[in-house]
Length: 78
Image 1 (cartoon, helix red, strand yellow):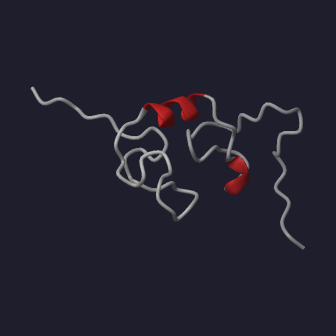
Image 2 (cartoon, rainbow, N blue to C red):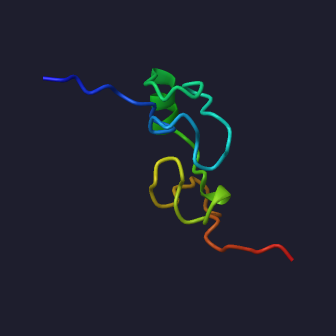
C-alpha cells in the first residue's frame, strides 16, 4: 500500500497561491506539507476581497468575514 503524502494546506501542493503569482510563503514553493500552513488555514482571515467578494480563494468557502460589514457589494472603480 502506497502512503499518500500530505500537501501544503494553503497552496494545495501547487507551490504558488492562486491569488498571487509568487510562490507560496508557507512551503517556499515546494508544495510540501507543513504545520504552519495548516494552522494558518484553520484561522485565516477571509481573502474574498482579492477576487469576487463572494468566495474565499484560500479555502474555497463562502465569504466568512467576522465583521458586520461584509463586502458583499462589489464596487467597480470609477
